[in-house]
Amino acid sequence: MAKKQQEAKKSRIVEAYEWTLSRLERTIFMGIRFFQPKRFLNPHGFLGMLTFITFIILGITGVLLMFYYKPSLTSAYDSVKAINDDIEFGFILRNIHYHASNAMVFLALYHMFYQFFAGKYKLRNEVIWITGVLLGVLTVIEAYTGYDLILNERAVLAINIGASLTNSIPFIGPTLAQLLMGSGFSDIVIRFYVFHVFLIPVLMGILMLLHFPRNLILDLPMISVIAGGIIVTAGIFPVDLGAKFTPEVPPGITVPEWYLTSLYAFIRTGIDKFVAGVLAPTLFILLFLAIPFIDRKKAVHWSERPWVSGIGVAALGQIIVTTVWGFYVNPDPTIELAERLEIDPLPYYGTLIAVTLAAFALTLAASEWVKEKRKKRPRETPQTFKIRVSDKAATLGAIILIILQLVIAGLALQAYTAGQQQLALIEIGASLMIFGFLLHLLRFASSQGVSK
Amino acid sequence: MTEERKSRRSFIQTILAAVSGLLAISPFSEIVRYLRSRGSAGSIRQKIANINDLPPNNRLVFTYPITGDPEKDKDPFRKFLLIKLPDGTLKAYSMVCVHLWCLVDYKPERLQIECPCHGSIYDPETGVAFKGPAAAQPNKTLPEVKLEVDENGDIYAVGVVGVIGYGKEAAGS
Image 1 (tube, one colour):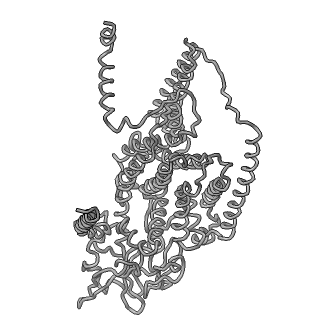
Image 2: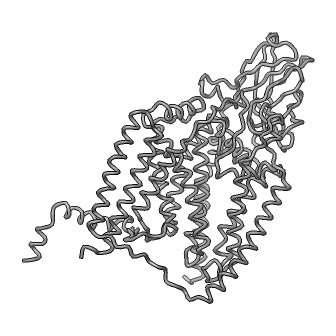
Image 3: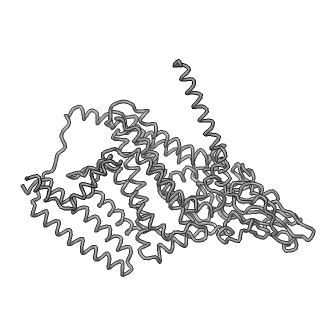
């Protein structure tokens, strides 16, 4: 009798929900378990999820940008200009798309290095590690094909370098370059568009199936804060269109996007194009792919495997040095452009060697020191802060946040209609961040069980 | 049947299936032509100008092959220089610099083809780069257009030697 009563209590909606859920159990979807943390977690553990969220943001904004973008030699630039300047809300979408792409490359790199130093590629995670490195490479290529679509001077410089690097590969290069890029810019624009909006994202999706662990941390508060942060950044640093590419006019000085300046620096040192631009980065990537098979010991703490950690620190140092150096162009306007772009190989490679040696020396010394420290002191349990928030305070806080959000959302709309799109972006992002804080506050309060 | 014969039989079956599969796919290897997207540039005969239109030590820019599609006709890869050298010889080259694809031009005052971007300089008689970054590459010759002049002095382009953007030496031409 009691059971029947309980069943009767179930509303139609709950019934429908449970019905759907039990059917979904038959699909692949339920193979993934989403875990919503009940308290604040160190985001280092779920940087991969945050990278994926930026991928989703890029997918949504990208699809919307496809409504107005025209992949053609004569109208690509003008269509982006129209999206940016004339089409309602286009500025907002383009800037979110651009900054999310930077965030995705950055988060993917950060994610990889964290997993590297934490030794997470061990413990039967080798497939996850390898697909992860490949996903990272595809992320950069995806970003590269994306910024080429604008057909401004910077894009065409990148296209030209990409074509000449592909062409420089021994034996297969010339054919490969033609097969990938066809003949002429009108082919290239359409093909890069196909790569950018379909081919590479689909490849990435397939690799993600082989990269995602079965248990995924879906930390909604952190996701909201990061997504909001990207939008706020977009508002503070909106991206410009650059100069339109006109083949008859020699381009001004442009450098690639930051994730390619390191490659650009290598090419400009004057050594063979293939060695600098194709072989060196390929070896770098292969080294990372091979790491789980080089480092086969069980130890996971970085100080227990100092040489491998040294590789990581050296790689990080090299990435930073070459990336910064790639931005440098001799500012003297009296010298010819080709000479201004040249990088003196001696100081360049000298610095790289010095950075590598210093990285190994420092890591080895630090690991000895840390090992000693870890031996002496027994492992302490991490302190947890006990801040008590009463139910009443939490509710009050939530209400205050909602009011704040209401004000900011209103201001965002008002700024948008007044034509202040940058301000609108900042406020849209801020509102999303407040949503994240609110979610965290609520979870924090409920995790204490204060109400009992 | 013994185990050995069984495994031999399955081995042969696998080989046969693989051979048949490869044969089924093989005609698709011509997809290479589709991806290369060369069109019929190698065979089109197109009038460019009359020999009297162009004084010696001068040049004109022409589009080849013309399609009528403004999008395609604007492509730098279809832009060529017709040069009449001081001695009256006619030469035609792709305008796309083999270094980084800027458009080169003929400078009558210096009797050379120059790239405005990174300063590559080409010999107008041969199309070979002798200075600048293009000269340092293995492929350093501008693709050349084959020309024909008829009895009326009309100049025709009849094909391209080399791959535009990658040089006269490039494979697959």
